[in-house]
Image 1 (cartoon, one colour):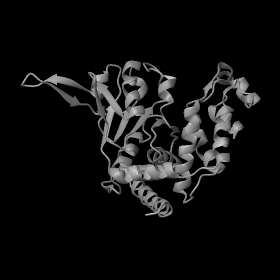
Image 2: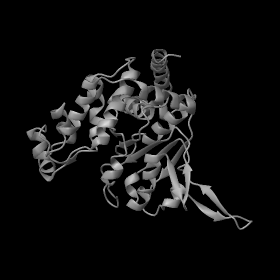
Image 3: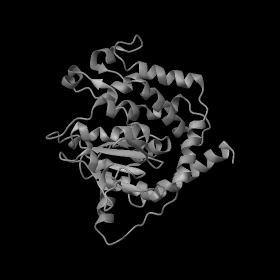
Length: 317
């Protein structure tokens, strides 16, 4: 099948997928879109939202609809790297045998990732970047597609460990969850307090998702779109000649080259989702906030004046 036909097929399959997800998840269209952009462009996502906004249910529902294995890891202060990766044990023949941890799955929900110390957070780093883990000198490949979705509670900072910048940078998107609208909340309460049961049907398999990920990577991009993405990322760096006064005044650190790569990958996926055969500048703008939000570090002046990261990114767009 030609790439043009494949893109048309992806448009159709994504619409079916959203209908399936909407059986369980009310509203949150933008959040679901960004998670799907992440999955189909082969990235990871960080979900930031207060408790009770159905973050876990959303990930579980998306995993079911995609027909993928799903494991949830609840991050706690006493969680050890071996609890995530697995460990070697002596079997009855006095031979070392490796017991796989929950990280060996297609979709990992790292729940409240900032509740665990950096040593355990770092156990995810190799898996996220290399799609493999090294335990006791042995390298184990993870099954593809592989996707980490971490959640973080923005309000309760007691007993939490902020994610290191290097780890934040591994997430393609930082996705902000807001409260549902009044009408959506009414619908949520109606559907969750009755005896009605909705089942989610698996619409994909692992190989189909890998094929679509490769299709998105094959999409051609015009030089001016790549230059726009790189310029946008350069503008987030206060010491760069391209940055505006807003950035110079309110930003400590700008985004690195991984942001430029992710902007183009996500713009390709966004274009494909909308039936376009090549992304344009509008596609880059559509994904920019989610990709830059966690890579730009505000200074104390921005904190004092209540300037949000979103406002700074808007000034660049």
